[in-house]
Image 1 (cartoon, rainbow, N blue to C red):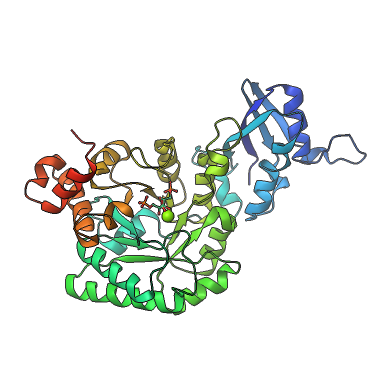
Image 2: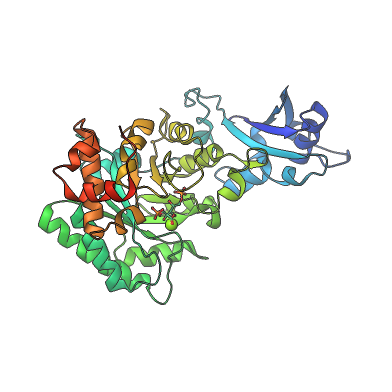
Length: 398
Ligand code: CAP
Ligand code: MG
């Protein structure tokens, strides 16, 4: 197990401030006290304004304890009065064994993390896209709350027949009285089984198990038929991913709601790249990373995709592009991020003028167009669902 190096963008970027941060986040405090353990003291490796590099000795960390890891590298420091603003830009896991491919993830193995159980290849195998390697198409059932289990299943049936590969609960749907998991999951799984019998296609459904007792909730979802789990990992705590991964053998879809509270400000907080690394180590199989054309503030999605998919001794995570996506944006997203992505649209499918099935068809047609090297506008001449979406929402490919 190796030391951890963290890169902070900080003001003021001085050695003294770096040392104060390192002390606070390891064996020190605001004043020297007798008996401080030097071998546990974090130290300033480099001052490169506006950045400082701080190294944390491996022995500071407990194996597979994400909350303690974050309390150490991303804890009190954000509140220190001597620091005007500070952002944790990167976390570099090193490992003194050959498991570290030199890209800073090897330490994950040293800390006992096993990474994704399924990852891109496992999910492609489940859906049947190992050969053509096209992007997966996902959707969020919309309206996202208020539907009954029966209404949820009816919509799932429509979008599954329309061609989506993956259906998820919205991040704010849990086990509310209007749509209990014990009824929602069997109803949706029943229609997806029907789609499989009718079309041979396996459509995945990720059940949101976010709750105060995630293991009990996940077991209840699985007992109801769930075969893919979803978690709002930021509101639940990132260790929720590792909990699900070490207790169950189902793919984990990671939603990141609330991340923008601390990832969006370029001067203060934690970069999404750090979150992506920890999600991969902890065993997330799919993770939202934003988009280049959608409704959320556009961020460095290419960097996050690279962190999730770069060659490592743990599996790659399926990057999920979501938030305001629609068929007209498909080409631009694939141009930007490649084909090893999940293109996920909620309103962009359920808001289609001819209904959700047509919306799913339009997304699939947009992907098919791209895979055949045809512009969406050209392809739409023979595909009315796509044409309707482009007419309504426009398009981003030339
Ligand atoms: C998308 C979504 C997701 C966002 C989250 C929403 O729906 O369900 O929560 O993708 O953002 O509620 O916005 P739409 P991100 O497709 O209707 O926008 O993926 O950036 O974490
Ligand atoms: Mg949502």
